[in-house]
Length: 391
Image (cartoon, rainbow, N blue to C red; front, side):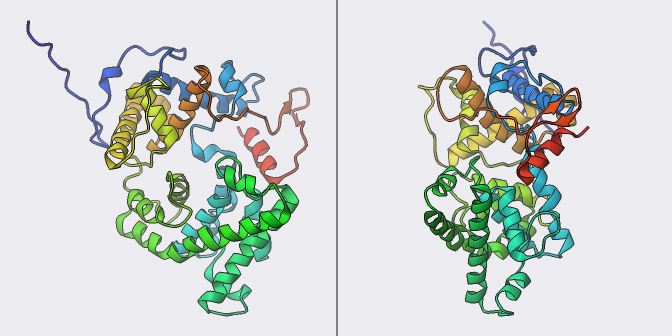
């Protein structure tokens, strides 16, 4: 019997990576019973539509019970509440105060290390430069706060005390300086007593904060020399507090890519860090959609394999629905983040357990008067409500 002729692979102009043509079956409007590339694409489209419906103040943003009950991040990280606030009132500071590339990287890292709008405002208050939101630490600011000293030890001590003081005041005013979204150990460390919280803030300031400050110009040089966030990530991940799964490194550099430092990044859709959640999502789609069969794979080879799979999935989405992907401006990093959310969705659907957070609306709209109904206690809540009122 003659062998069945193999269909040639299709290639993308951008990545020169073969598209996953083996999954080109007819798409469904319903969530697939098994984890497939189509199921993943449908998941992202459903989550995107929820945001659109929220902006239109629809009474029922989704009929999907899982998406309605549990918290899932936006398809685009740029639409998340904290990131949106950061773009409006923090990242733009580099254009106003002529920060160096190293200072831009440091301030992006400092923001993500704590991850809360309130802490950013706390830093701003310590600097005494309130302009409606966000602080921005520069070398010249530390010199002024340190009594016009250029001594490196004095400057570093000034930085440590500034961060600790901001965190203490933020905790006093708002309960926490750290976000619980991805800083749960740090968040929990604030709970016990004021003294234990202060001790923890000091450890973070003397550790991760100082390490990033000392390496800021080296990381900036990697960005300028290569224009690749993969190369910059390799340098940043060696900084204390920014290694591990690579999550913090990825968060910081995605912010840096929105500034003059790495806005001309050449590998934006050719590389992304693949975290544990995204790896589990890829395993469901391309390897083993079985909780017992899935095993943790490590090493350089595994990382390359996961990246290739992520690129295949990215190309698949663009090949199946280019109109939607264009509307979203879907990027490789978006797919990586949503793979983690997709894994969470599947864990809930298949009752596999694991950590998940229920969705709690921060504000709502009363249809009759079109007025905000809940009490707004923090700047972050105001931003969240402002986002909801966008048209």
